[in-house]
Image (cartoon, rainbow, N blue to C red; front, side, top):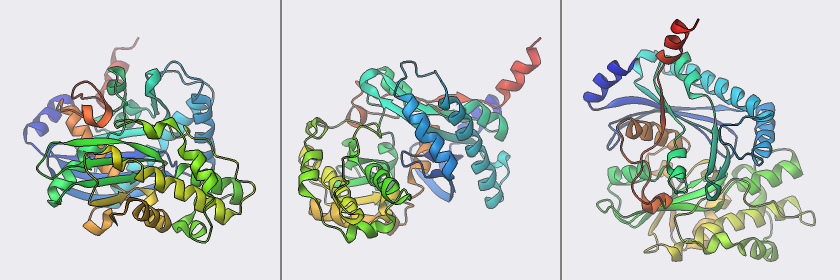
Length: 391
């Protein structure tokens, strides 16, 4: 679909959009279909998941290590170039599979929102890097792609994260929930959206600290499996208060929102003296306590916490968040939402907002000075047109 056809579709209001998300947990790619005008969610369609294999995750870990040396967000040295190629092709495979399973053809999709894989997020240095080639994706699928969502916000002094709060607010409004409500995404890093009420424009968001990242790293190191599935190990362990206290003595927790974290902002502590169960319990308690630490920094204590993301499957983490916040905690699926697909849905929603020049970020969500749009549009005809004029 070229720009003229896309403008015609936009003039009709509602777009059918595929959102793609590969999060800091590095477990795989979430795919979701949303019908929206960028303001109201008209329909949440089917969703899917396409896991990375062991080799993919190993390459991503190497790429993240390499990315720590970057000073130019466009540079792709060593493993970063290989990882970007892998990420792009895995997303192509995920879309092809999703369209086939839904019995859609690409012509029935108006737009794709492609987050890519974050390998570096240091807004204080003006750097945020998400790998994945949006142009290749657009050319392969034959559908316009919006990508590189975070850079514009960081370029004007914002944190570049979290980006999903406007989508969270749209969900809360559609459900007509009594506030204040907190929507908590538990990926590698945890981020929260605070909605004062469904009818209010007060929107505050920030990262709260590690969610799954340290737990996953610890489990991989000790068991070879990068997850405490269901929180089973943590539920059988004893918390080491000294370790948790040490982790909580980090300047990040004193900062008011908005604020954001790189996945590797916290080093895995030395837990060699602890059993697997005690180590998992300790890191799970730390993630939960980090969430609760944001409550005094919000206008009011949330009456309800809605948990989504991979960590929503960790029953022990969810339980500990409830114990630490003293509030009601439910998982997004209890409301008929999809906790697993929510971020992919969000980037479908944000892609339409980007196309329409609507804000993706607000002063209360990323600290940017004024509401800011973002994203880069890749059109499928671009490479063909370049090839046609090439000598």
